[in-house]
Image (cartoon, rainbow, N blue to C red; front, side):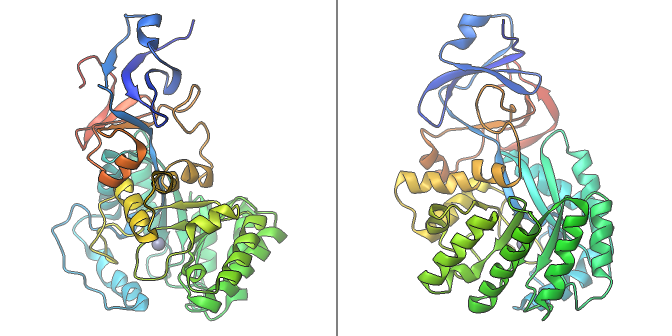
Length: 409
Ligand SMILES: [Zn+2]
């Protein structure tokens, strides 16, 4: 007989079925209509009341080390260029009254309260701060490991070849616990695409980790680096482990060139993560996906030194992407949801994802009748469960994970 520790009853699934979901040891043990009544009445059962139940969300791109979450509101201090933001970070971040660990932890809790179970964050690695920010984010990851999983990208925000010594630091970051190697605008920032890309791919190959490369470069300049990234991914057999972040160029080149780039990315196994906004051309998400490119999404900056905007809510982010991409029909809005859920899980290589028997019991409930309504209206998350325990309720993170109980509603 199937063992069940607790039931969530009257759960509306994305396909419209209303079922009971039984969990055991952090996994989903049973999903079925009337399953709670049929199996036992001796385990705790929490009535979800017909609300929609969706799998824990996946934030595929964020910057936990830059956030100002938990601090008093601060005016945006940087100028209008990327270089100004890079330099302003060095002036501000080390002197804030809250540490990297504290600020990162505050933002993780905000994300968990909004139904996020998995995150990928970039963390600045530069000559001035060395591995200090990584150490802070690693500590936050450890502290909140019972609320969410966290992948860390060692991110050379200030550049690689223009800052001799950064390649060694990136290597040290991976040895210290970073999960992926990052990169940034190899032409625009470094003016040495071969140097940067050869350097970061060598570290990834040496340690058997993936890469996630920020590519803001527009037009032909960006396209050149998309091609270079695809070529190295194929040559090193790293297909499925490489992501391009933003890829704004894909939205600002001719349709024919974008289609060719999509084909090349799909063949090489290079994914794209988008945040939809930013005042630059959004990549053609539907066309990329149709070509077989794995496209997923993330919030990017959330109330930080780069942007005052963002709440950490991935349903709100999906709505922003849908609004910007002119996704109006339900199936298009559902695609926006896929960017922050199942597609993100594939990109982050998260096994046992989804509300299915054997899946991890990571999910949230929301007062919506279907996925499209959940995205468009994104009301607050009623209940968030991670590893079979309640981690947030009524839009707020609990002090500690709590077992599902009859009276938790
Ligand atoms: Zn970023």
